Length: 451
Ligand code: URA
Image (cartoon, rainbow, N blue to C red; front, top):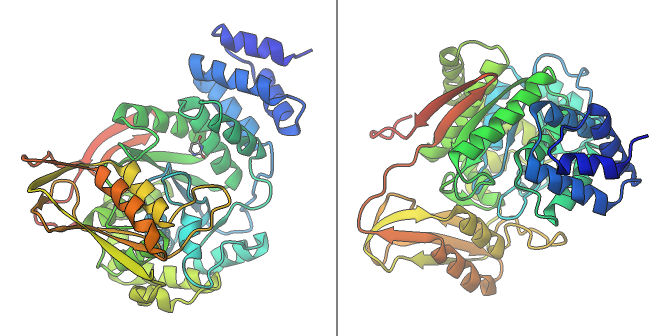
């Protein structure tokens, strides 16, 4: 008979768990027969001793099967999903999903809410007045069949083992562990039912994984799990050493996403979104990378991708007028400029602190019960590498309550490092991780600024 005590001792001593032992733990913990203290001990043993690729795959499968496995067969054609490991100013889903749908690949996407200093797509969609992220499975399937995309919250009972384990990891110092992060993310992706999964693994000071090596290791583990479970899976490693684009905050990020689909967005966001969309199309067998990039460019230039976002917003109860005229999206009552006091170059931005500054303005949750202010956030006027002089506007803060400005401004200022020399440019995309292959990339905005 299996006993949790023996499973914990085996992993503590560096052993390899069997599928039966892993399933015993996951089932028992989800059902409540394995107590928190034994689960915590096993998580710490895994944290310290790691897991083999096979153990990680088995843990992921057990977590995915702990609840509903969504069946997307009611949706015709290839279904693709994208997942970002979390960032600041990361509104890529709102740009990439419409591009992909305009290229005839279905995006049936279940997204998440903001976590800590990082934003969440659901909160952004809800910032569009009237727009909902709660659809019944039938509404979800019908919408994806008719217009090619839907972005909603997780339905029903998706990977309940992960929900419990994630909460436990959060309070037992066992979050930042590759097999545990990989199985947590991929259990939800496998349960969501798509055929193709593109992972956007962020790297840098605003990401979970602070170094390129750690990000590649996480990406490899997740790609292996996806492929092992019969899903076409790849990962792009993208930068989070500074926020993506200029706008951070829910309504503001919808505005920037819509502007990007209109050809009026920031070049860094456009470059990352094009790379993500191109690689989703490649995974969906739409052609070579070069052919897929041409399709992406056409979807943007023709306005077809913008039209898809308008259709999605309308189908989910919102007014597409806000997407066509993004400056009409709800605005905060008050704004405050953060002015530069130094001469030189902006050498580094602590992205996590900038995310916290946006949370302090009301754009994220400080506690589980916090209510988000959709219009709160900030506009970044100067980014890493730019020359600055005293009096330059570094950022503009937006809030409904003036009292929030002083803490947010202090946090924002503490995120910036100035120096006399210009820093080396930061790549935006570092690597493509595919099954058995890592291709190093160094995508940057070209000197002429044209992508
Ligand atoms: N996101 C998840 O869903 N799980 C993790 O463990 C980390 C990030």
